[in-house]
Length: 79
Image (cartoon, rainbow, N blue to C red):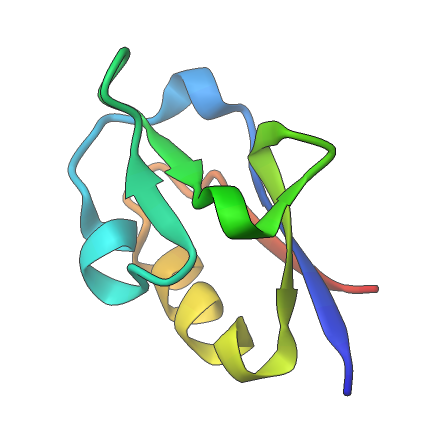
């Protein structure tokens, strides 16, 4: 089964509209400190809140979130 890397880049450009969280809550959540999107802890790569490795079954919802992001900072790539 393929894996995908999802990145929020640059994360500081997040405008906190939460569209990614509403579309794909299994991958994205809001950071309580700066109210910006981050990757849920379960999928973070090396503890980085802006980069994660997700299973193939979450790729579609992550891509839908990327497509809906108003600032287009979510990047999904097959690894």
